[in-house]
Amino acid sequence: MKSIITISREFGSGGREIGQKLADKLGIGFYDKELLEIASKESGITQELFVKHDETYTNSFLYSLVMGNYPVTADGRINPELPLNQKIFLAQFDTIRSIAEKGPCVIVGRCADYVLKYHDNVINFFITGSMPQKRRRILERYDIEKNKVEDFIRKTDKRRANYYNYYTDMKWGEAKNYDLCINSSKTGIDGAVELMEAFIRISEGQN
Image (cartoon, rainbow, N blue to C red):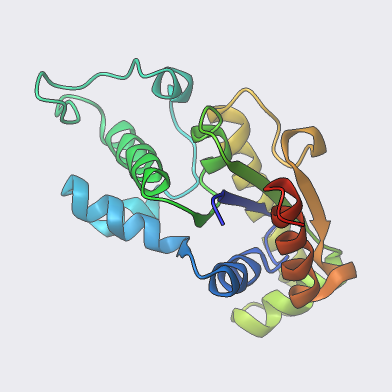
């Protein structure tokens, strides 16, 4: 196993659960909300602020980050004069890169596929699902009125799409931007994990 796995996902599709099970099965690290905690510790910015700005777009400068042109101090630290939202994004960006440099892992969301687009051995998945399945999963996990669930799902996906589309030059959920798109409503959670594992093995020439 040598790949860095990124997972983009629709809200309610089970993307986090799939990613966690895949990481456990492959014996590699898993990062979703955990990424925010690491970025907080390394940057000195409170975790509450990372959660507040999580996958929410503001001013775009991701392309310059990917190309290595972002503003830092002479000793390589994040420029303290940057606006807070840019400091948060930059810290998260650097955390994704540093995690990937340590070896194989699974990273969920947060433009990780784009951040790592110039890295070798990256495999990008997108998880989708049918509305009835997503609705049921969200009702099981969140205290939301039944008549408001679908609106909650659509708004969350819209926020994720806006974040991704704004910070990258690609479109969230568009098949050509991923190595494999999976409908978890068709495969089930475990079936999605098995399919992804098989795809990774084939991609690494281990089939």
